[in-house]
Length: 259
Image (cartoon, rainbow, N blue to C red; front, side, top):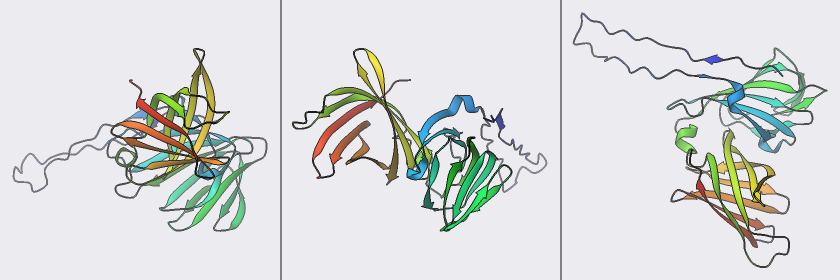
């Protein structure tokens, strides 16, 4: 799989005019530039927008303050897809390697290395990996004002540790000590990786693809015959698992893990 050796932010140097102390435009404060490598940010995630399959996502500079630009890489492994969805703002895909089947406003085409795709606001698109090789793409978009992760979802992102308790009598339900890792996967899209502690060992429970709404967002994660709902209440992550008949099966309360 191709790797990005390094990504260097542009560095802008602003000079004040030393001969004009009454300049109407005071010098701007220079923000800190960053370098990140994909080995440090790689996360296994399900196909975004309920596309299915497994992918590896690389979200760069998510902790950079006041950065509205989103820049990430995604490797769609064989059988994985980005589900067909409507765009809320302009977005660009650039194919690094592999082959994909693109659906853009209902029209299908095959895309490969060197192909750039611009999906405009209000249009819809989806992308499916085809062939034996991973489909690796770059994704970039400018978020709408007020939608940057640091503003919208920072209270939910991160690692949470707590307890999941059964509600009522369910033979297949057992109280568990759980660990959740919540990450951004795109506009209003999140992944939740879950683990439980059993006999002193950490057992992987897999990853969920979740939708976020509101500021800060409330997560909705669908599983067969049930839905998880998560939100942060007074600094704690609270979750409810509701069955299709509206019966509550589980409740979760977790605290943010200390770094």
